[in-house]
Length: 624
Ligand SMILES: Cc1ncc(C[n+]2csc(CCOP(=O)(O)OP(=O)(O)O)c2C)c(N)n1
Ligand SMILES: CC(=O)[C@@H](O)[C@H](O)COP(=O)(O)O
Ligand SMILES: [Mg+2]
Image (cartoon, rainbow, N blue to C red; front, side, top):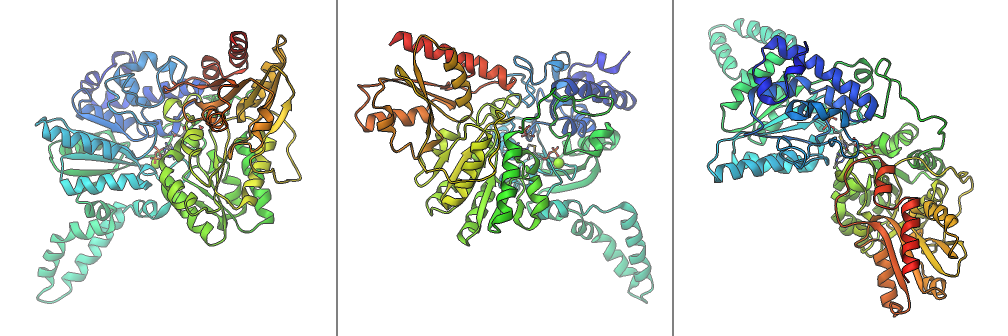
């Protein structure tokens, strides 16, 4: 019988002895590999913290203590052991369990996460609340070394140390972000002292002092007393002790007995403690251990080999690939082009640029705010920075876009991948707000290519414009059009009429243009025109002429309706006193957080796929 068969909740874990826990770790890994090989997901991060999770649940009680995972992409074992073992096969499926801790899903998921580096601040808030309420629960934040590169983490550490609160921070250090971790902190953290080195060093110091006549013994005793401070000078402890955290570590994150002992000791303390745990990303599954970057967030694969189970016959490039290749092509002819990512070179497609132009590529770590202002500094000096950050993660750098780039009208090009519904990552990751949070910023040019070829032209245009310029494009493959090989600038603020029609005009945005065209092909009762609204800002300057013959307009976008392209068109009609002459339908996403599921399922459910668009257009035209 499997140990896992008799384990459903943390209280079941507490009953297990070391041997049973070790067996359970193996069984949990097998379950995670089996399910993720079918559903996709964050395999390597989750495999790396199985022992850490077991030790946490052995010592702490998540029904009483607050356990806050940072990002939460590594919490699969935690989900399995907190009542969701029997639903784990629904991971990231529409209607299934989320790939991230989600309070609506379980009380054990105490705080919602998905964007990195929030755990320490949230945990500190809970610790302060606990003390104000005179409660006695422990509060534990579990944060990775990559997430520790974000400034927000230090804001939390700083206040926590200042307040001196009873707070536990567990630093899960696997020396990896998605790619190899970057920055001074990463190299500082990996200054791990091998115990052999320390023992040899101490022996030599002892022998040295013993040779000193008369005072040697006293010096040796003094040295022994100061050994701890000497040691902390060499270990990363010195950094965290500067924040008034009591540093413990580094601890082997796969040795269950050690972890349980350390957690038991720490549980008795009532001061800020940081436990530095060393783990291996992908632990226990060789393909993931060998390639933790690929297996950080992976699609379906064959468990036996780790090989991706490819979607048959699909060789259309992704928007990401087209962006990365095109930027390399442009950078070969323009040495002023530099590229910036916030810890996501592979995800944004900048990995090829990094290989070809290592001196002009910058991975700043999970530091989106810094990335934007760093780009502004480069732009100020005449460079042409391209900042590639997912739409959802750029939300974190809103003020830097306003204050450091647009107000100074600096030529920074922002490439927002994952613009629109992203699918299985769900509400924390859907890039469905960018048209709303960017379109009101003065000086900013905001665009959405209808296909991968237009992405190339807009990227070229953006770099030529020497203006703050945004391209937003969807997760996934292009539509399969031929790519451009001779770039020409697109006129700023001009869209393109794709189809004549006399009864109504559809204004499509980005990824929705082709589904709109396909929908119009099936609408035979009406003669509906189609316009590609490739510039959301500045709105098409001759729009008045374009729409003057229509009394019905339909705007279609993969963005929330509030503040999106449809709102901008409404403002436009209001400004030119056209509101009473035109009936307008806005098709987009509702004022709510969209759940996880496949991109196709979600687009279908929220009526922004071809069928949904067709249905909404017909209902609208019939009602007019
Ligand atoms: C604000 C933000 N930027 C980027 C990401 C994308 N992201 C998710 S996990 C991750 C790396 C996290 O590294 P680490 O904290 O060390 O966790 P590990 O995967 O190594 O367990 C990144 C960059 C994110 N979730 N949030
Ligand atoms: C956990 C996290 O935030 C990233 O791993 C994200 O899931 C990557 O998304 P893509 O899979 O779209 O690159
Ligand atoms: Mg890491």
